[in-house]
Image 1 (spheres, rainbow, N blue to C red):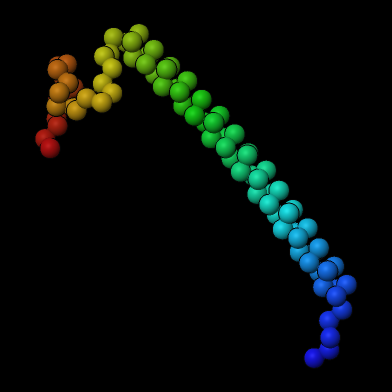
Image 2 (cartoon, rainbow, N blue to C red):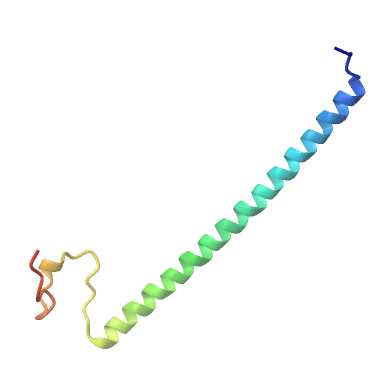
Length: 83
């Protein structure tokens, strides 16, 4: 085997470190974008839930969140529920 030039090893190391840093920067950017989109989606879901609750209130439907179906006392809600 031929001896490896220390300068070429240092150059290779610098190139690899540069590439790794670029990759890390790109992953950080993508991660930030994903988190931003998740936050936006969360806000939109919260708005949607509020709008649905408002519509249910306008329609005179009681909120059923967290209540089992068989506990609902409104007529016709459990019709046809055999299981």
